[in-house]
Amino acid sequence: MAVMRGFACLAAFAISLFLASGVAYGAPYAAMVMDARDGRVIFARNHDTRLHPASLTKMMTLYIAFEAVKHGEISLDTPVRISSNAANTPCSCLGVRAGQSIALRYLIRAAALRSGNDAATAIAEAISGSEAAFAERMTRTARAMGMENTTFRNAHGLTAQGHLSTARDMTILGRQLYFDFPQYYNIFARRSDHAGIATVPNTNRRLLDAYRGADGIKTGYTRAAGFNLTASAERNGVRIIATMFGGSSGAARNAHVAELLDMGFARAQTRVATRAPATPAYQGGRAVASGQTQGTGDRPAPDRTVRLQTTVSSSPRPLPRPAAEPAEEMLLALQQSVGQAVSELASTAEPERTPVATEEGIALAELPVTPPVRPETLLAEAAPDTQETPAVDEDVQLALAAAAGFSTATAEDIAALEDDGRLSAPDQDHTDAIDSAIAMAGTSDEAHVEPVAASFAPAAAALRPEPRPADMASTDGPAPNAMIQLTSMNDDATDDRAQVAMVTEAAAAGGSEIVSRVSTSSGRVWGVSLGRFNSRHEAERILIQTALSEAVALENGLRRVRQQSGGFEASFAGLTRDEADMACRRMSARQRTCFMVAP
Image 1 (cartoon, rainbow, N blue to C red):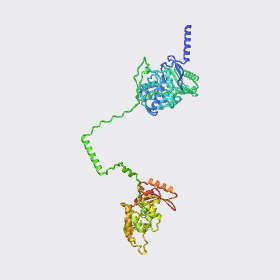
Image 2: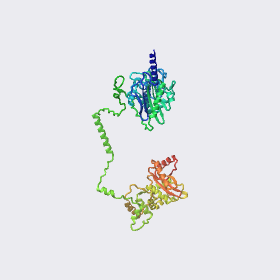
Image 3: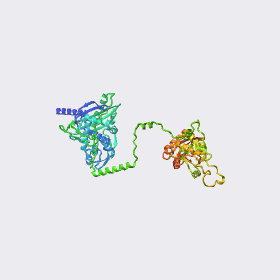
Image 4: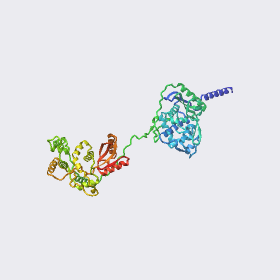
């Protein structure tokens, strides 16, 4: 009996030591400590042994949920309908019911904090349609991360055949969560949060409260796995991630993980460049792990996993539809109609003149253009022996004007012009005569036109009607001088020198009196005045601005700036009455100064 009591005491002491070591009977121990900054392993024990991960599985469930939100598969506010499979999951920690709808964000909180199995199953079905399809996607994502020894069979982590992982792989997964989704990582540090239907506490709150710098990540427990934990803490810019499998209790697990974290901070290098891990390839959409083969037992062969390429590299252009050839009769009719139309156009249109480069044409092109002969030049040629223009009488001047291309008008035309107010007033000065000559000649060069107007001054004076007696004020009829003839510019005038000779002979023989005046037959004798300005530059600027804004109405107008006693007058000349009226009305509508100038 004493021997048996001794063996019993020895067995009890061994069990106490075993439990004190933090390892539960039937749950193998594994651990790993990693510097999260660069992924360097600080401590490892059985780190590649495939064990039951328990609820550490939910780290991958949450990673895929965050990934689905990022790629637009689902949103945080998407209502998820709870299926009977999710509601009946063992250990329904959140307490959802079948047929109930709850937003995805609340399911994420329940899975991360309360470790709700029903919430994890609902997330899987909402994203992939079924938990089995979601588990396949979890395995594909694990392979893309480099978790070569992990295979998932469900989204919650309850013990299932082939549902295995390692301490190394879970540490890698915790590091990916921190770097790939920093905007969601803070959820693991919350002590509690509202999950839609209830406020759920964090299963890891004891370690978060007891260890300085701790901010996550996930706990797990099943009878087959023991008490598991992947924890993360940061101190002075150094982040350590530690994973432990096979704890005997929650308290023993937390104490041992605290020791692993202390080891990590003690052994971590002071200056380490942070190198984030590569984000795994996106496994959503229609990507499947086809061709996956099984190894011995439940261990798959990860190097045989085949992933389908879902991104379209190029978009081929569609082939054009085959078009039937038109009938031969239609083609002949079309050809005939086109030929007939071309013939009609050729018969009506003017023949195209093709320039031919000849020696004679080139020589003529190089000759200077001879300007039209002016009246003062004709007068100079009439008396070549004198130094100055010969003084001729009024008849000769009028004859020269007729030779320059003017035609005669009757006395009735003069009377009509007088009644209409289109003859110059008796007190009109020499400057107004020059301006009229500028407008009619189509030029603004006063220095060039003034000699011409001076040569016609006697004739312009003859145009002025003599004062009427008082008793003739109400008498209608032509001007008193019935022999006065008004001339207008002749567009078909012959050579000036030939007409000089002809008119000189007619003047010597004696004939009727001829009065010369610039033509008003074209009607472009009206103008538009824009007012007076302080400087020539301002007047010219206003003219240019007005010409651009009123291009339609002032298309044929000539810009003119005339210096007067009150400043510089800006005006447009050479317009018809309708053009001047339309221009003034358009500018008045724009609140601009404008008034018409009569001839």
